[in-house]
Length: 120
Image 1 (spheres, helix red, strand yellow):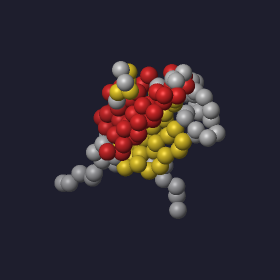
Image 2: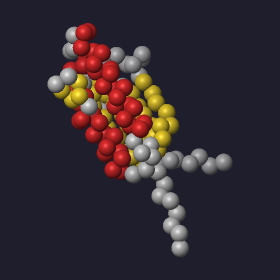
Image 3: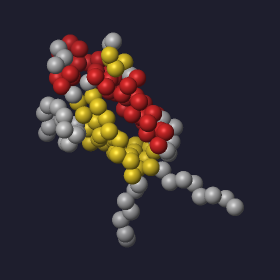
Image 4: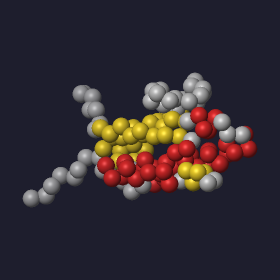
């Protein structure tokens, strides 16, 4: 008997820019943006990940989001399994920005759930 394929997880990656970013001199900000692009491409390119949408609050939210809400940016994705979610979050720990890692400048929280189906 064949088993049904496992449904993908619906994941909201919530990202916050930290005060360390805002404390940087202008000449060092570009390296953080480059690392941020690498992180976003890294999430997109993980096997089985489908990016459904993104939101960037940078025009209407200025400064840090230290209390968890609101976040600075969001990535909504369908992800094959929890391990892939962990790998996506780990990009913040492993992508270098000079001698530091991206997590010095940003933090992430992944909210894992399932698709909310709206009745017809």
